[in-house]
Length: 471
Ligand SMILES: [Zn+2]
Image 1 (cartoon, rainbow, N blue to C red):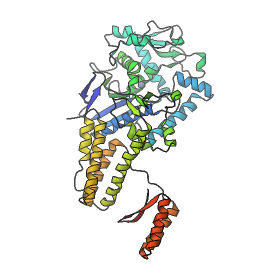
Image 2 (image 1 turned 180 degrees about the vertical axis):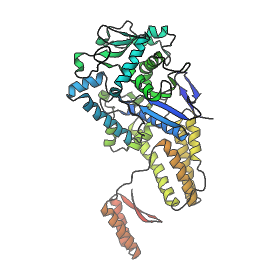
Image 3 (image 1 turned 30 degrees about the vertical axis):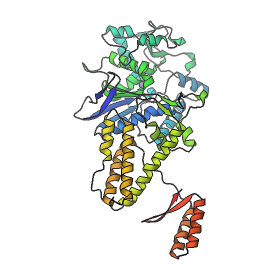
Image 4 (image 1 turned 90 degrees about the horizontal axis):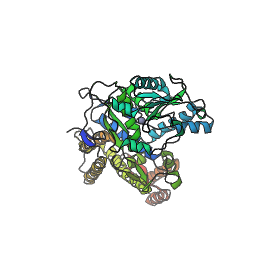
């Protein structure tokens, strides 16, 4: 059995088969951040899910090209640029950098491509021109260009592939902004927005006059430019399924650049929402967190990662402080086992196969059942701890288990516990205690042990000598 994934396009779990199964190559695109502020943990749940998918495909032997766009021009950004007095590039550059730092803190691999919308304006214009040529896009009096849902349907295409709801009714409930009064039909959406005075310097020349791209067309243009007109996997948060992803399909398939019979995207994956303390995150509720807010409270990126990846991606996840504490203690169990294994494995050559990678594969093959994968990790932790307790584990077996962990962790991405700097004073006390024991001055050794304890440290006697350890 191979990997099976839920495909939003068909609303069912399906075997994952890329367009080119022989080459085992996969092109994947995840809608990335809009860089007008620091990303919040709801955004990062989706980005970490994308990281998990990518890592798992590599683990399963696929060659993956992972693309994540950076939306660096849209309404909110333009408003903030105006308020900040900075240039568009300065303003978005700062938050793009912050986004990359947050990804690194959370142990996510850097995507192979991070296309910025403003670097793809010629591709975007070319795609809109093609839609206009095909009669699917029309120009409004103010120089904006819209996508016509009716004309698209007239070409035999289906609008409403990702959602069961009547998309037109849904669209009518959206707020119609003042600059969209020229639409022929309420369901149509902007491909190119004519420049208005509030846009300031944020405008590009086009066949329709100065303006800027709509958000949806950016993703169609960038994904097809980098991965081709048909690619294997498209991911994003579930709130993007409609209208953003539906519009991406319409624009991309409306361009008819795909080979006959091929869709724009083969598998669509959507990550569910994140709640904090049972409620939708909102600054007014005081339950709005960026990654930085949590690291400032002393949580490590790997603890946040563990928590954000602890539930199945299609389940709404409730993020809580207790969850973070639970993540810390769960990682503590793994870390202490890894420390013991590392110590025992010194000089050992792996001579067996750990059961862990196979258990991880069995769990994640089932639509990325990450809860089952974590259960496998903790079963393994318990079994190996039991083997260590009875002294049954040889250095070679310990080395095999460590190798199994490293393989599993290539998917989980937790890494090793960051080593803690031991204060010089503590090191001196440990040395003094060792010397006292050698000199059989046990009263002095005990006094030093108590003093260390009062400073939050203990000494562990290992085969490599005494080692200070945090209590
Ligand atoms: Zn997108």
